[in-house]
Image (tube, rainbow, N blue to C red):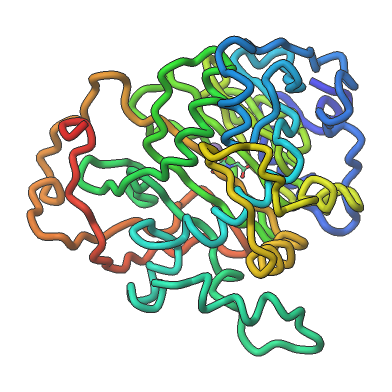
Length: 388
Ligand code: OGA
Ligand code: MN
């Protein structure tokens, strides 16, 4: 435990909550001096540089998804957190804009599910990007009437759609996982020593500058031996990684644009949270996002395509005050299936189902996600494993 955490918490109390509130505080702002910044290398004695396996991913495969050769990645472990790997922005210069555009333009599209579907009809959430670009590409001068749909987007789910109420995934609520994000996840996890990762569920979180994400553990996946991957773009965040108990004081670290975390082994089931979004260092995001019209030195088989000037105008405007986090999860182990559940939703044979609402213990934005369910009718009755 660092000095500040030790002086702040008493034994037996909810140390995580106390430190979460400390970093969330606005007035006066907290002291950030204990926040680990991996972009500065082995700045703290808890941070240890690790070598990943450059043979697991060829330089060409890495470049296809916009990553540098694995031998150049700056990867770290953290003392006291076995299985935790932090990769400090391994993206090739100019490739982050592609992933930002996917998160803002592509992944919120149907059949994926987002928070807006809880209160709006499918036709209203059909083209979030198209309905938002006018308001976003022209920087508002003075007061704007209504927020664009993109600005109201808080989460999107991919693959097995997470049910925020029951905290479960289910076989009958699945839509195809994006192949580009699957490929990116496979390369990252392979380099970290996890061959054969299958990206089956994704949660995208969209943060404004005053958003936070409450204290939680990701334990709904059925196989915890598979790593959980987390990628961030845009503004920076303070991320807290705790222990298996709320009394364990968490370690604070920055997550900057392009940074990746791999949570595996003992670190897979730890409490964590995002108490605060912090502005990216002046010019930093701009530099990372530079040359968004990626030089096509990358031949044809590349996944990462250039982003048009028009799309980039919208994306860059959005991420100037926002952060997007993507978590990618393998839900089932090899050969594993969802357990048979005797409840009625499993026996449903039509294509509509009452789905997820706001999670009880996770908070994004200023208020908790709603706990009243809406009905949506975009459920695809696909049994992924029996079909592949
Ligand atoms: C999550 C999560 C962390 C982040 O979505 O489960 O923990 O950095 N996200 O946004
Ligand atoms: Mn989480």
